[in-house]
Length: 135
Image 1: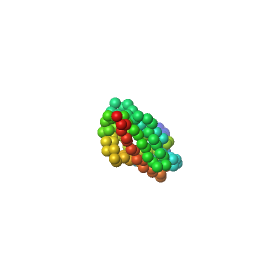
Image 2: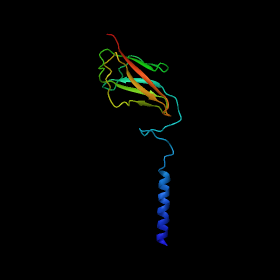
Image 3: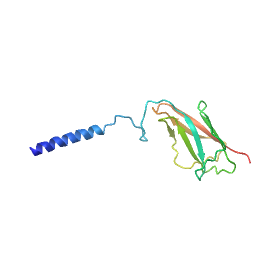
Image 4: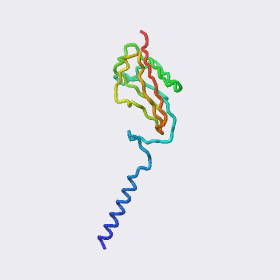
């Protein structure tokens, strides 16, 4: 009788474990939840120096229609070691990911970042242009 209960218990545990491991919600390649949101934009942008303090002289100018971000930094800023921070609409993600300091020293060539919507169907590429404040 005891062996019968252990077999039944084992079968029930296996079934519960299998049900608990099912993926009812879609996950992307980064392990992020895919939602039904199609919004895709940058709402705020920050640029930090190597000391993790802002190097902006004023708020970044974000144009969500033209997909551009313009930011002016203080004279003397080390443009090779800047840390960009993006605030995105809910459930969106950024490509490429920010993994550390970024080189913005080529002022003639804007850096590009793509915002991908929560449903992963809409992609908008933003150009980030850095300008150095005159002396």
